[in-house]
Length: 211
Ligand code: GLN
Image (cartoon, rainbow, N blue to C red; front, side, top):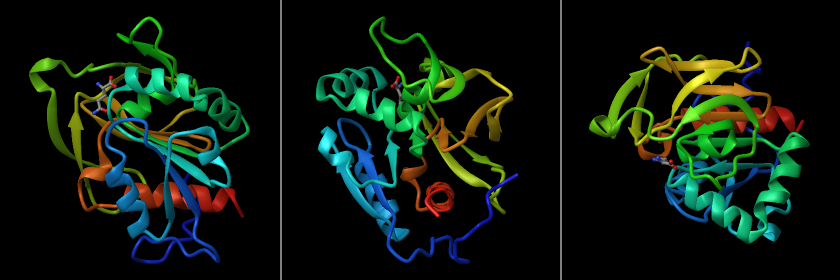
């Protein structure tokens, strides 16, 4: 079942102090995440170096190019710091390439591509095939009372999902939103629409964990 919802009716989270959420800003679609999180009342900041992680309550890993992000995570020193934080329960919301970075197993990645192994799923990069590089769909998501309009762009396909993973939405029988502990992933780009409800769900998870 879901965490109790501490948020207000408009989906924002009521906290005594705003949650501090980093957005990994090495590459990709980070700016729209910052906007959405700010609109929901969080203090959002861009993360490029290890000191940027200090004081954060949670992190968003955006869409983009997971192979490039993997390289930059290593060269910046962020990978090892984040790996430790995630194993200590640090909440992360990974979207599209961010989902790939959090997965246990990545198929069709580059040989040197690294992932955090934070959620027990196997993903195939660009697994929906070139002819449907991009598509949109209205998804039923557990915890949301009406469909979420999802924009998929060269999305990863979840090919295996362990029982420990809570499936929050599927498309065409494949998992597209999932949660394991403090890790939430979406195969699409929730920051590309005005609908902040998935970000709000993440903020709620962070808020509950930090109480
Ligand atoms: N296909 C990209 C990758 O492998 C992900 C695409 C996206 O984030 N929109 O990283």
